[in-house]
Image (cartoon, rainbow, N blue to C red):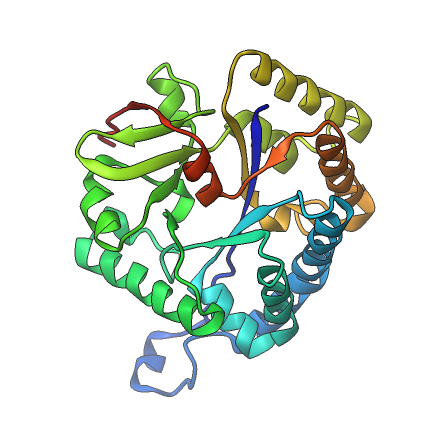
Amino acid sequence: MVAICFYFQVHQPLRLNKLRIFDINGNKKDYFNNDLNNGIFKKVSKNAYIPMNSLILDLINKTNGNFKVAFSLSGLSLKQMEEYHPETLISFLKLKSTNNVEFLNETYHHSLSSLFSEEEFHQDILKHKEEFFRIFEKEPKIFRNTELLYGDIFDNIISSHGFEGVIIDGNPILKLGKSPNFIYGKENSNLKLICKNCELSDDIAFRYGKSPKENLLKEIMIKINNLEEEGADLINFFMDYETFGEHFPKDSGIFDFFEELILELNEKEFEFLTPSEILEKYNVKENINLEE
């Protein structure tokens, strides 16, 4: 039976104060608007992170430990959890303790350094690894770049950090005429590529609310069943964690929809896997090159 992987991205940028050229001499104390950052982070935590973490913990229990997910927490999001809302960090640590949740590595600043500077890209990855280990006492095995950017030119740097796999966008795979529902390898690298199923991910992240949730749930299940019949190994739902509670508020029914989807998948005995478990279970379908 086709495996299901849910991965969520968590990031909050640091908003800047409005500075004038005359502030360069130090007339203004902070470059960052701490009050605004504090307020936004607490709001998003209240609306999205805390209730969704609670729901995921509940679903792990309701499925007798079958449900599993993965997260990528940017370094800036971790920094703000510690400074502004420790309760949010505690809730992620509670999820870690279930052993049903995998955490991925990314750039500390959620930056586009990979496009401009190899050294800065390397340092951004390293800083995230160090901060993540300080808090979670674990070293991630899987890497994801900002916006799932990936190309062969990044292989050497990513491989040098010891990662086993990379989360990538599914569209470049589709452009090669291939399915995102398999693991792909590299000819000159040990890295394995785990591809986002853009259509099914976007059904939740962007198309929720455009039709009754009962209809959307039915449509998603039909697509999953069709992919299974076609011989897909896995289906990767990758999306922004703020989809739940921020992009779509609680009164839209988004939390209930997600719970119904997970419970139906579990009832039909689909297997939930983390990215690392996917690499352990499935063989590489073929080697590919992605130059851009």
